[in-house]
Length: 156
Image (cartoon, rainbow, N blue to C red; front, side, top):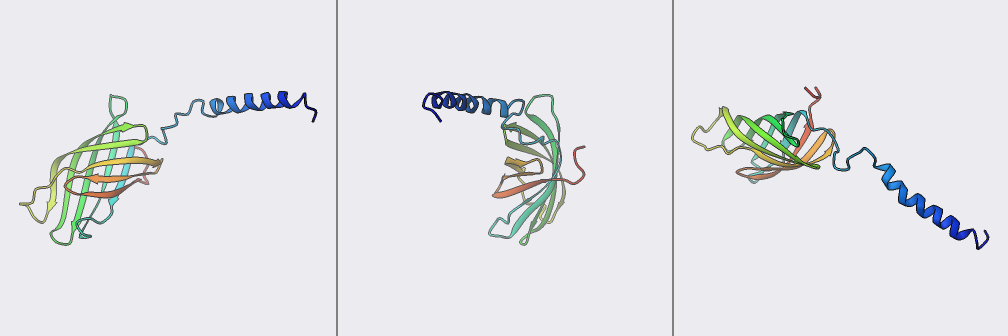
């Protein structure tokens, strides 16, 4: 290649490189990995020295405010030392990019082996990993890693 063509090819390459990222991301928000509306199931890792685990379901529905969702969740806590508790909770979810914060309010204790025990609402902080998975933590009376998976029945 002759010396006078090198600067021209260099400028063409630079122009292409500068224009490519802008065209590649058009119309696609980088933080929106998925729509979180619908039904989810969840499970924590064992906590309280491995004696407890929580599973449950959550349903996220539209809210009038952007980035917010109305939700309901049912948590099933199974502990070897005091048995099983099943708690129906209302909740509100807030989304910041790929982060989801869930704040719950206890509506009804459906089952409890120790009625005198005080049950604290189950809150979660999550990161959207894919359209089918969110991962984060239960942040309540205890803290434990938690995984949410989209339920097989899809968005309702």
